[in-house]
Length: 71
Image (cartoon, rainbow, N blue to C red; front, side, top):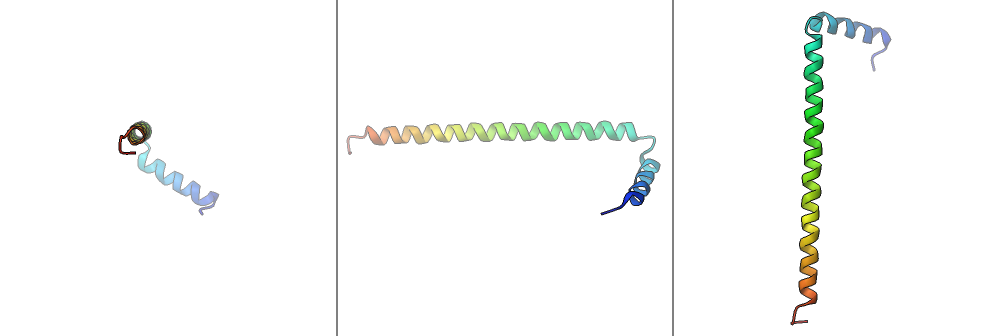
C-alpha cells in the first residue's frame, strides 16, 4: 500500500497528465458511474420481476395439482 509520499507523487503525475482535461474526465467518470448504477437497478428490477413470475407459475401449478381429478 502506497504511503503519503507515494500518493503525493501519484497525484502530481495525475495532475500533470489530466490537468486541463480534469473537469472533462470528472464529468465522464460521473456519467459512467450513473449509467453503471442505472444498469444495476434495471438488472435488479428484471430479476425481481422474473422471480415474481416464477413464484406465480409455481403457485398456479400447485393449485392445478390440488384441483386435479386424478388425486
